Image 1 (spheres, rainbow, N blue to C red):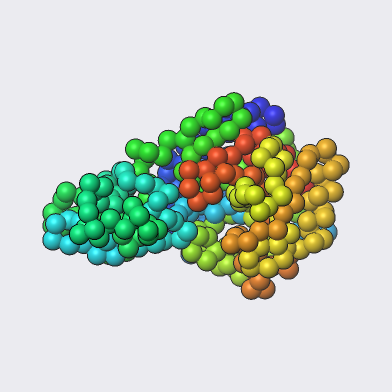
Image 2: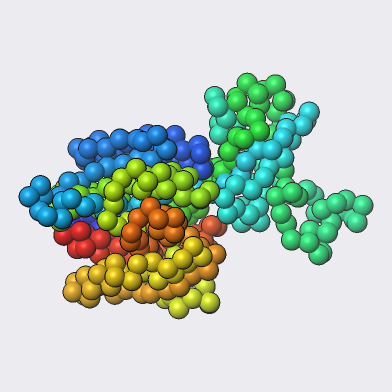
Length: 355
């Protein structure tokens, strides 16, 4: 088990996942990767009508708990932007998709995921050597940058863009040119889209650990790479409405901020409440007890401006119990930084809990 949790191995797996584009609603690239990984692990798996990738690990058939099931989710979509219009010069007006902000990306290369071809463009805010006669002057003096002030320069004709399948509704993401993760000291990974590619690494490694150790869980477990989480937890809502689940545990990044009592170390974080409601206290106590029994440090937090597959599914009555387990992360929804040890400890804790 410990060989699978080495920082080098987790970093390599996260790097592979990050390089698969997956803006909400245009997740085909990460879908292909995940389906191949679950096939290699010889798990029963499928893609459902909502776009979720699901792998099932069965519990013992003669166990009374086998009538129930638990889902562990990690959403596979990432934040980005969406094309609104294209002018005669091939300049593209874009709008917000999910929790993205243009100042987080800065000017630079982005990818447009066309229906037939991916086209690179430059996220642009305009020149600096200007006076008040230019509208972007106020961005230097008094106004916060928004998507309304940004555009994409493609230097391509509208005809060429149309041939690539670039149209209103096309998704924009940070380009692979800028996406390669960076190893920040021995313990940290820094990258765009650790939300939620690092949680997918937890999901895949957990499946591999269970298979390698023959660690059959106490009940049926669904490993759910959920679709469209950033735009309303659509995939998890669909899945939890279709299946009878005893509990759902969402894997997430957890924001580091002065307003939250979270330390930047290798201890996972368990949430008690977020913007969508409270998590199940008995489920949290059970997870915390397992952490204590296995001498795994665990942090607790209440968050604002945050939601997960778990809190949203529980709020709408799709699951009776939900929890959210994650790893402390700097710069959430930006160029994120996370402790590889905290990611590994999420896997250790989940493995112990499932047994």
